[in-house]
Image 1 (cartoon, helix red, strand yellow):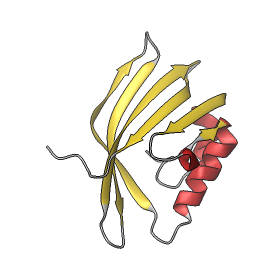
Image 2 (cartoon, helix red, strand yellow):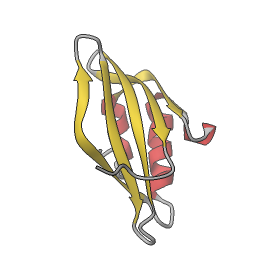
Image 3 (cartoon, one colour):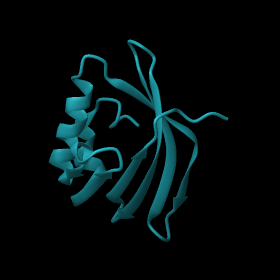
Length: 110
């Protein structure tokens, strides 16, 4: 979660060169390659009220298949607005290759 919480430099170590992020919320959230992903994270971190992301429960990881998934919530600091989502991932050669981020209008409740 460090990457999503304002550490764009980590993109170079975490994703493949042909990485693709597909945002379910808006095409503006798509990114291709580590540089575009780092730029997207940087833009989010430089907003007036950057969201703080938290992963819920344990991520589901299937290393033999190269798949993973996790639930997350993002909270803005100024007004405490919450949204939630599910990220589905594929891994190749120890780095993320594809990600589908599906954002909902509210946070997860247990």
